[in-house]
Length: 216
Image (cartoon, rainbow, N blue to C red; front, side, top):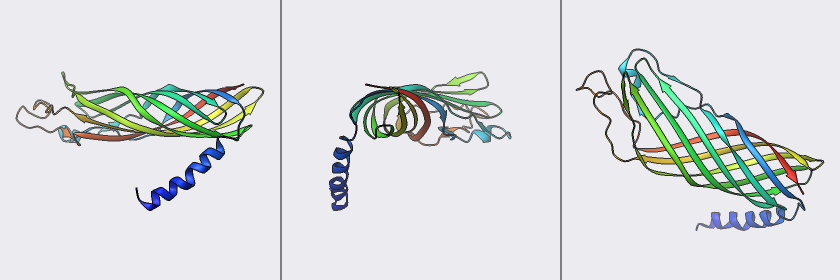
């Protein structure tokens, strides 16, 4: 471990331990994503070579939720996120559904106005991708799914309830099992115009969250 990292840990841990003593409440918090950061998450390249039409990327759509239990200023949580995104051209359409589950650890400070932050580790999930070319469909397989996340939540407390506003960023990694894209996914059986951007996928999704909390 480098001296810089070791020094950072020496500074960080006393701050965290001090923060954990600043709240005397037990909190249960529920959050749900309301918007997804706009970004092109496509994994295939050369879609425009199949036609002269420009490709169109639909805004990612997210669903899911987070549940946290905080005892005073430290707690655990569980988050499930499903993100759907697609990209289309005249003849090709790429659609992906990414389902991820995270085990979270959280820290919080404050009483009436609170700040919670933490990190999560991917504990399970599923990646489904489909490439449609006219009447044909290709479904690449993935043999690995990993990742982690960071999040923070602002809260306002009053009369036993909390209103919450959060932001979560998830970094996901995956890789294909080596399946080649069929030649018919192109202009002719002998010309392959579609390829992977990379067999190893690394993407970042981010969501704005709203939620409520209960205090005891």
